[in-house]
Length: 310
Image (tube, rainbow, N blue to C red):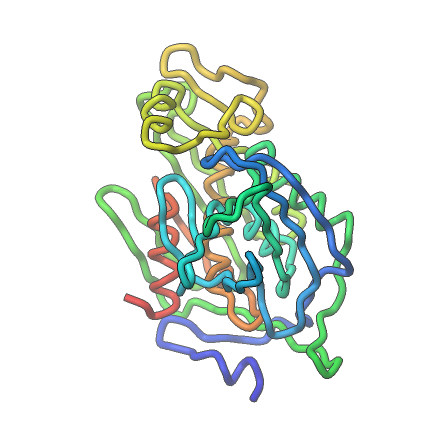
């Protein structure tokens, strides 16, 4: 059975060949760093994967597929849960893998000196820059299965407009010949951020690495104590996020882009939509995706809608 026949097409989605072969890493590469929410140090090793296996985490010899079926939206991040194990803050790493076209990858993760049932991906500078550099360091190659055969990469195409929404936030996907993302954010309480829009036309690996991957996560300074009281951002600092004060503006300039917060939302969206990928297929749908005031919960809602999970 081919991958194309294994995947279900629906009224909303049709799977089509991309004309490319599935890819994986040409070797293994390792990175270690502090995690944003737990504040613990973790080590992640990216390893080649077999064609058709897709992307999955290997934590304490247990496998957790990077699939929306195991996604759980937690405060300020996306978490994967399976058999009592939790992998937190997966969105930046998965965004880099999807953006770079790494279709199959085994992601080994280890908490330094901790034998608990939860692990978290390092935050680094708050962007996907470190992961993109790691992928460029090791390089990519055509993935093959256990018999040494390659597989054609396929992509989901949106057939008709669809949307998800919560209050005044929404994400819509419209049929398109290319992948394009338009994102808007609004923070009227923080004039230095205000209302921003950014659009990729179209989105490919070069646009991703140059215009999206470098954008860092951001927060409002006056909300930091509230988040820490809730047990979040224990590892947060001015080194791994751009911080905006309501009255004083950016506390750790310069920004890499004038609209860096908006671009970072696209980075997160790509990571969350990558959870739609199956059997080494493309996760990001071929569509024009338009989002306004979205977040991880809404991103995952759209991914579930694509999957046909209500």
